[in-house]
Image (cartoon, rainbow, N blue to C red; front, side, top):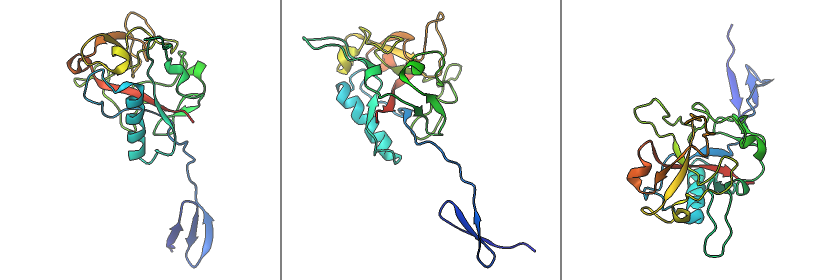
Length: 212
């Protein structure tokens, strides 16, 4: 005879007349890394680092993860007497997990090595969705970084993320496909700062990390 099961919350169920049963629940790590699902639509002009961070925070909040401090993985070059800002110094110490709870990297050193977990199946947006990569007709694997492979600032930052015309942007490949064997997730090549230029195989996306 089949008995009805009544569940309350995540962990406790009552079988039949009230016998408690412990239910199995997956302990998924909270999201601390994602690729933006939409760009800001103004080429390399993101409103500076502050505008990019605000975009990360808003996207995270929209999926219930706004209780953390989110930072864009972007560097800026030295300018006007101000020192360079390195992306690796903005994102905390790790570990970082994607929207499905999959580990991306335990630490900064792992994130900036070939041991990180980024790839076509793991570099998800904040909604947990895959992003079309190399080989797809809608390839959008280019993401803005302004960074060298070690996470330090490159010279190509679209006027420190305030220009949609002059200058160029260093981009990485979120699916980790390589060009001429170069480390690719954060430093694959450069593109122009226009919206059209960034749309060749991307959409002005960038990575966001929970810094706390």
